[in-house]
Image (cartoon, rainbow, N blue to C red):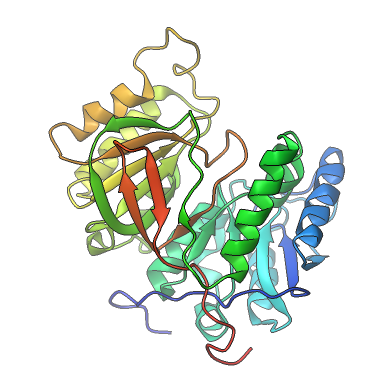
Length: 338
């Protein structure tokens, strides 16, 4: 397919009760100790009203280095799912370190022919960015199956689990805008201001690294965008460096706003006496740029994820600690053949 220029927004088709959702190893392998979490994830999806199937590579014992299989085999399975009309959504079992190995093997024609929701975060955020760049697909930076739906959700309160199930179901099946995402006391205004724009982001190391490849998002994709990002592991100085990469690349000069997720296991940010804080790091790199910043939003590795649909228009009110989805993330089922 031709990928020059910037494709328009491509919404996946809405899911309906009874639709097939496939859990796939798009990056890391399935370890035996996480089999109970995976079964719980299947139960969550079934409670939402969907049929659930595991892709063939999602088996305990299948592993190549740090991956579920070689990048070529993972791409073959992913492409088969993209082409299968019975499959109406794909959710990644886990993250990992593999997606960079098969970016050049993805069947983007299949994505355009039959757009379907792809869910996941961590390494999967790279898929969302690249497929959005190449096809316009709205990607679902949302919970992974095993550590998310079957792990972090299970450890949450029953009320929180119920709210998340309802939110995800509405996002995947409804063609009306969700509106305001549910805010909590962890949300902090780091720089006040209001802005509307497309939601673009993921794990910050993937955002920075993909800009060094031929799959880099053109700068116009960031013009007026609300950049959301989170990070896990490494050092606080790494986060500072990744932000400076985006500054040097011109990204921070283009964005209209920023939403920062809850950091997880980053050395130098733990504890009440940590210095600098994540807020200080962000504001230091932004400098005098008049960019509203909302911090402490629940997406990423730290726990249950609020869904962040890549590409749809949002309203950010950092001072009011509010983030609203202004557009539906899916298209009506009548929008083209299924």
